[in-house]
Image (cartoon, rainbow, N blue to C red):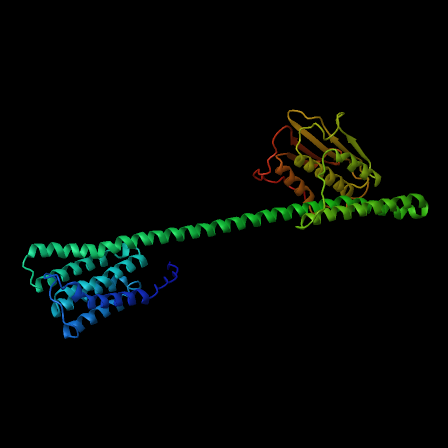
Length: 424
């Protein structure tokens, strides 16, 4: 199996500015060298200005400067070349001018270390140091230095200093550059993570809004549909009751619009609409509103009330309210004419149970729905750590049971549990 083709490594750019600086510095030092070494009798021979030897030194320095421009792109080849070119001066013009070649070699080692990892350069650096030491030794010998031992030591020291000093500075600069690059990638990764978290939060919020919209539509529209069906039968037989049903339809329609305005207001940044949070106390009004549409509903609540003093947090109470609302809407849609019972039990064992039960339908079942109502109830129950169960009853009806924790901190960061299996 062939390996996938790798993307080519970007080529290092040429370095014309360092090359130009090296050339200018070297030439300026060549002009200043006779003045600087006038009082030094051991400085070695110097070529006369404008002589063949002097122009040879200029050509060597210019070649080295040009090579510096390419050292970042071809370091393993250019570095030894920088150290080999001065061998021409050892043969042609030995003496003090040879020391000027160290300028380009210092710059070349620094640029190579900055451009390439050290593991790919150690062979070239070793060869460069050896060539520098050899050229320095030959230059001293050709210049007439008699002490061979001192010359060898000085040549080795020259090679180590010219290579080691820029190597050290280059490693420091490369480490700082890599640290900045790592921080930049870390910042980019954090930004991508924040964007992903933001998108996930937006997705969850949209899902919650869709559940709210579904609850509003299912609750109110089912009641409006029932009242409209009753009005159709009452127009001829009982006009007064039909007018009352028409007023109820109008009130239900207004309630739908109010709920939709509040829901849309949550999606607007400049919305000033207030949205009250439904609680267990609102279940009484919810049941009464359903009764006015003609539904037969029994409400069983504790003697002390429904919501006050139960120890259930506001988010859990909203979940319970939505469960009752959705269950009554499902009963009206899938069990027309069936009697319903809403029961809120006394808290036992730090658990509060809300049950919505309907009997067998008195009319034909319109068929299974989409199942989104049960899925929404299950998701809300998971959000507050509650247990939701539902299923058919022995008498042919349907029961939904929600068990909430009491006197416990309700966390909104619970890990999602598997949803209950939705009936077909």
